[in-house]
Image (cartoon, rainbow, N blue to C red; front, side):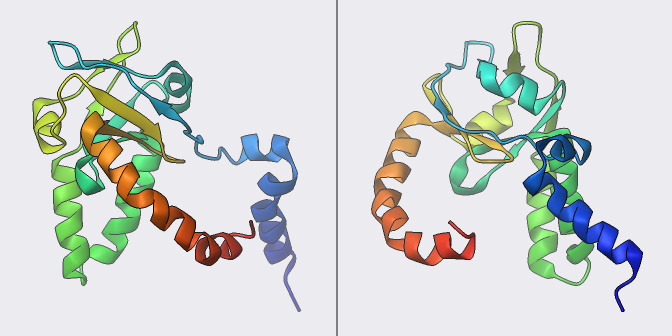
Amino acid sequence: MVEDSQIRADEAASAPMTNPAAAEQFSLPPLLLGTYTPKIDAKGRMALPAKFRSQLGPGLVMARGQERCVYLLPQSEFRRIAVQIQHTSMGNKAARDYLRVFLSGAVDQDPDKQGRVLVPQMLRDYANLGNDIVVIGVGTRAEIWNREAWERYLNEKEQGYADIADDVLPAVGF
């Protein structure tokens, strides 16, 4: 016999999918989408894309990303990821290594009144960011890329994108 609390938990888990008002109640993470081309100024500041400002919230976290990009995450999403990794890290050397690199390169940022954030020199160096950059939305995070590196990455991955669609899309019910 299934307990009432389990039924309520199952209903709550599916509520955001069927009821937009319920999604607000469960505070789903923002869905960051699109490609933008802001510039980094001489002081290392970047204007956040206007669509991302409210989605990222008043405080955000920048961190080293994969493939030499910089992640931009809402603080709540960053904390969720860090906690998840920490739960596996004590007995897993790869998770410990990842956590060290990930957290040691992370910085809290608060956008100024013009919606700009400082991209620290350490992260600009890591991702080879000059003033010509691309900011992409990747669901629960955004990524800052060197424009040339992003174009190269995209050109290399576009055929693979089509090739793996048959494997990935059925798994997500698309």
